[in-house]
Picture 1: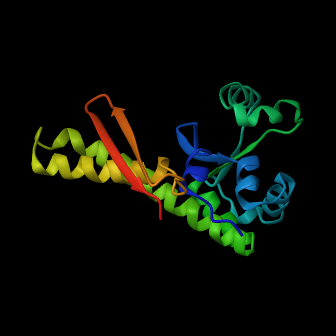
Picture 2 (picture 1 turned 180 degrees about the horizontal axis):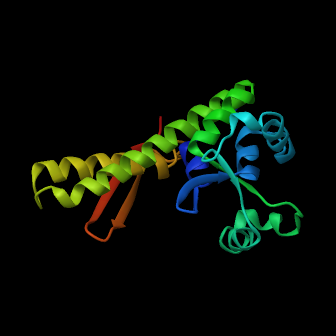
Length: 183
């Protein structure tokens, strides 16, 4: 069984209706099952998925998704509308799908959402701290560490690799370089 990387999960999180979600076909891919298996588990346990856990995309949202997400082009010819799992919906799905891969995937999803939330908290805090202060540097360092963990692959082949991440938010811009050595 292969371990799910943060980047595998992070690349599948998209924003729809102002919420961070993962589309049912991507959930299925992460769990190593067919999309219909995810949707069957959902339909057999509808009471576990109240409002705010999952929603079905409408025709316009589906079209935008197909246009904007290359890896979802295959949905173009599907007669059904994709379902979007929110973080809470993914946690609930984890209680239904039982396997070693499902457990590993659930842990990766939980960790990734937690890291994305932490970066968001840091970004929201940055404008409130004094410019060029020790606290600002610590926050930027922490955000950079989290982002590098999300985007710099663990399986680097070379002895040492450096990646540079530059983020430009409305209030703050920071650049962070990461050096990783292979294990």
